[in-house]
Image 1 (tube, rainbow, N blue to C red):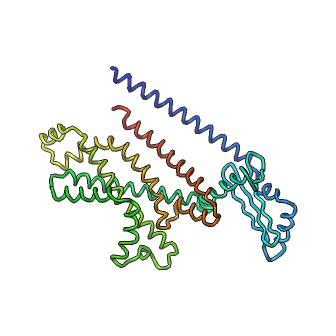
Image 2 (image 1 turned 135 degrees about the vertical axis):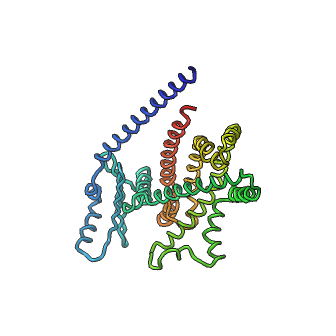
Image 3 (image 1 turned 60 degrees about the horizontal axis):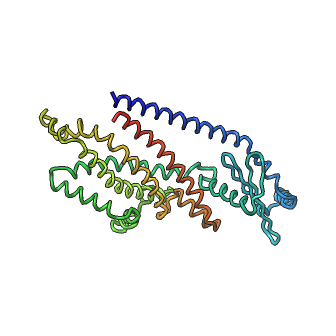
Length: 347
């Protein structure tokens, strides 16, 4: 009876927290909509340029040589516009639009805010491929985890197998990939394997494919991350399987079930619930480790940030990158918390 009451209380608390979270999310969404509607238009932002800058812009409209470079970046609730002229008397003006007002962004807090808007806009794909770097990071992480869980299950079953040869091979594999740095593994797959076997990752795609180099780098990264994830997931699966009471193995044997049937029908289904928390944690860790692909020039969030930093000569660009990673991690942590509660609700 006490257990039943405790379960009811847990369900009510979970529903209450979910309701509060939903209200907060809706409130933030409504606030964003209001601020987006109040955001100054592109025409209003460009109209803020000084008279001298406006004269140069008019000359650009009729002339063949451009004297002014105009940059306009718009995020959901804030926008940024900069003007820079060339020549002996070069001019530079920057503006930030927010909540129906336009502020100068040439120095101080305004300059910092303008930089953050500009960097974030460029990292999110420069308005052409929204969240390009984030999409690559999520795609790589998801595929790596799918490979890792599937391969890890095979490795875990092999490690606890009564066949000593298979057990030793699987144990050695797990020890190797858990005992060496992921970045070194990435370098070995991307650089060493092609050198040893005489091929290039870009050769997997047609010669006329302009993205062959990047696609090849992605395949190499996927292999390295999948192999690494498999080793860590193997230990998660092994621990979950061995946490099931031995009496269930004996009961299955008494019923005439084979080892494979016992694992498939009895042990693995129960182990799944116990795997959920550590697998979710492994996903978040892999999500952050995906930033290492900058070492092979894959265009993820970190690489895009590094490229912008080189062109702008400003290390502030890493702050928006930090926030983007934090938002993605927080989103998946919230989802995984809900999944964990669902699976453990009646335990």
